[in-house]
Length: 200
Ligand SMILES: [Zn+2]
Image (cartoon, rainbow, N blue to C red):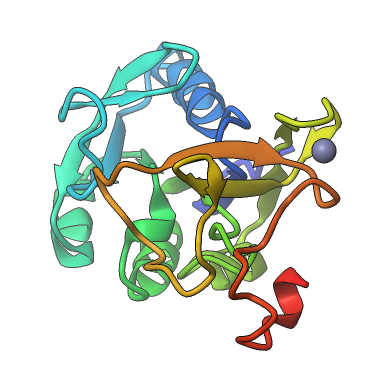
């Protein structure tokens, strides 16, 4: 059970297609129904869909405020009781202290994001958010290959595993993503040469 008073931090993480945005929308809608002041922020980097909405792959949507920095997020979060942060992995590291500050100020902070990048390495500020959070949910998708529980995100370029040495964040590039389980995840062909034990 959540605390009766005061703020706290919830993290919803997992690979792509695991329903993170949907789960955040579900929680925040309940808070709205309970009459709480709710806001969702997302990094301005993400313009896959309508710029003003958080949209899950399954089509659920809720208004979101795109922000360019953590400072802007904190400034615009004032006065809200429930603060959602979507795609939190794309924010700079200070999003950790900002989330804690908001929680300590009495807000319920719900952060959703990818726990691992396409190499299966911890993504940006997520590890620290997980260790500070009161509540953590790690969602699984369905493996695109075998149908098992998927915990990783496979990046593909022209249908082949993307190079391990590629940029972590590629917005609008012509690559594709699939959810994969540990066994079916394929590191890029350059992973072994780079000594990538995490993806071996
Ligand atoms: Zn699999």
